[in-house]
Length: 325
Image (cartoon, rainbow, N blue to C red):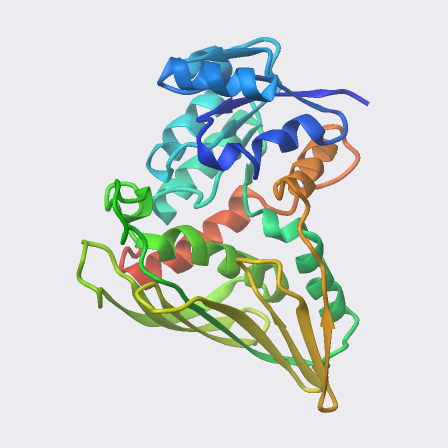
């Protein structure tokens, strides 16, 4: 079994715990080098995480002979550029979510990787987290019967309401959809895994807080290819924090949280049961393992450019940036 040697482009906050160590701890995987435009920050990251070398130039990662695959962990506005450069160099690439600024960029990324004959994966790691695979398994076993509908709700306090620089999600050049753009895509992607692609979507958006130039409240309805109907309400200008997705079946309901490892709640025949399932220390690791296994010919990663682009398309429809599906 070959050891897959990784390089990271953009070793920022998301790589500190969630993803970076996953490349060091997955079986048959090692992290060879990291890159950040500010060299001193790349050097500091490499020192703290025991990474052999660091760079301040992405080409040093993309064209390195001792790097087999690249993880792109920059802001979404540069994902397309780096993925195209990796594809041109013949390097398999794993890109952070959101996959790109819009669906059109995702299509370009898929086409470039397909033309180069290299795989493209997207960091929707919840597809392989234990509590989400537990939800998938329960539905597959028919525990709540035939699935009719799904409802997701997310209320959160405003971001950037304290002193200091505003988070990148509130910069329209980086996010284009506020916190919704960065976080709701995880739920939408997981529901795509469960119920298939969205074939119809409609909704309304608003900037209720009016403290910046991005939307903070979104209401939507969906119809999935499987026939399941869905609805969503997200408000990032709330006074509290709530995150619940409820799947409604003919024999019961299944509820879970996307953003925190709360117990999965199963309700059947009027009785409720809680299934406490925690997250691993490095949440990307189960998904990274499927990528390593795919590169070694022993498995398959289920978070691909194609699935990531479907979620981008839904986000485009809700945020008003329409493109052909």
